[in-house]
Length: 142
Image 1 (tube, rainbow, N blue to C red):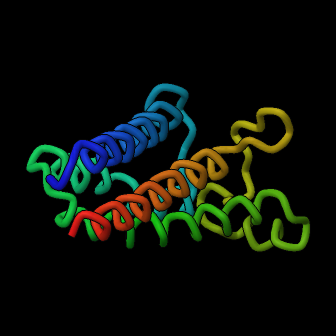
Image 2: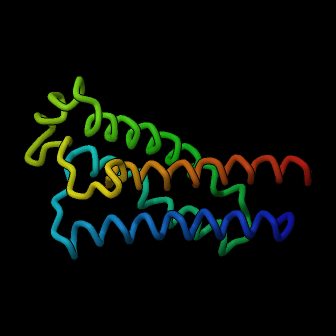
Image 3: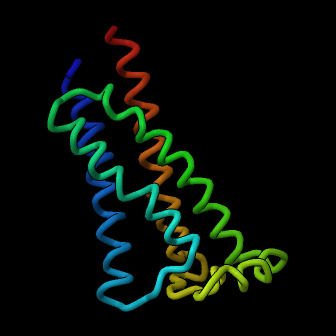
């Protein structure tokens, strides 16, 4: 590891991915909310981040976390689309035919705008931005 700042960034990213993963499992396994197809896609991109960044943190090598920025970038766009399906009337019809559980279903809606895809999107954005900071920090140290 180049320095402790990189290790701190990896720790923040790993904790964020762990919280998001545990949060999604809480919604489905504890509260019983059945994930829609877009939720499953977001999970496919979030869950490996716990392992990717955990391994990078354990080995103290940020270079092995490169797949993380790809996963978080794609997940960010899927979350944004899913959120728009929930909130934009023009896209809500498309979300109704998403699968067994309609993608426009809002299990939670805190403050009128905080839904599960919103929470996932924020997590992906935090991870993506922190990884860019990790890249910039590595570039200065090389």
